[in-house]
Length: 141
View 1 (cartoon, rainbow, N blue to C red):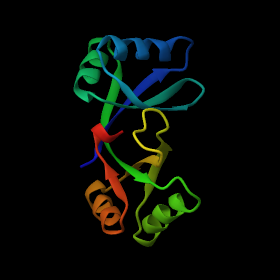
View 2: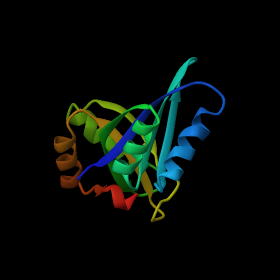
View 3: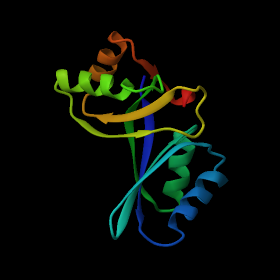
View 4: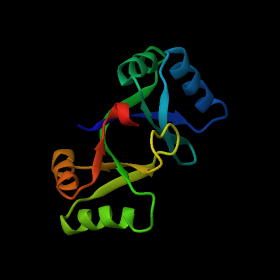
């Protein structure tokens, strides 16, 4: 199943995020999720979009350095303990979580939508499914 995430390396400079947003917009691609991790000189902008192929082509045409990474998206109750349940499954099964973020824009339900980056997506998807966690695909986000 999985979801394709685009990670773009951007210089930490005024106007750079607007430039990426313009490129994505002009490509007719809709943004479902955005996350930015920064340092002093550069940042990693993580996007989930409705059309990763067109977004990647537009970014490539504008000389951006990026990677397409498979991630796992889940829908869970927006209630205390929901994240803890998933993280406990990871811990009990020795799964390293590289990062996670919440998808708050574009949600199609009132539940929480979380994105996880892990090493072994197939193993983690099976673990989550077998424990009643709802997996999402690109169109669900």
